[in-house]
Length: 166
Image 1 (cartoon, helix red, strand yellow):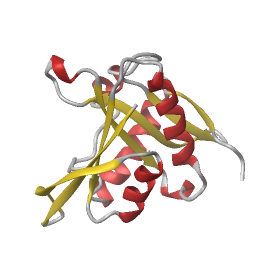
Image 2: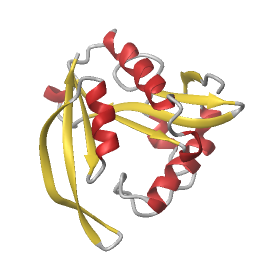
Image 3: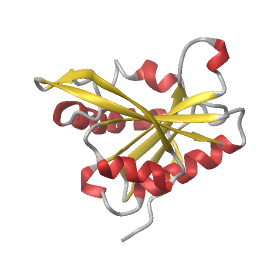
């Protein structure tokens, strides 16, 4: 099993990142987006990231293919929340169970340790015991559940929130 190259995302990755994200939009409840995106529509999403600072985007590339990504984004818009970020991770199902998610989060959290970030939050659509265990492995603890906060595929979905302090 080759080791993936974990690096900052580049504009050339946008099409592959959009395709990967759309897979989860169309087939799962782990994202609450309902309609797939075009790469053009995702340009503003990608524009929020930089190679330093609180908001970063890392990709895992294996044999020239994007195998997954992890990012940190703004938690809330008000300035008092600026030291908090939300972490997100998506791994292509074809590359699951190969340590790619671990490598991505390790790289992301290592980068954030040098930034003005105090807390990292993650939302997990339930049920998803694998994602909860994955986040707990990185020191996240459960802080609460929003019940029936999302509606997708004809059903209401709970979201558990977890946090990790740096």
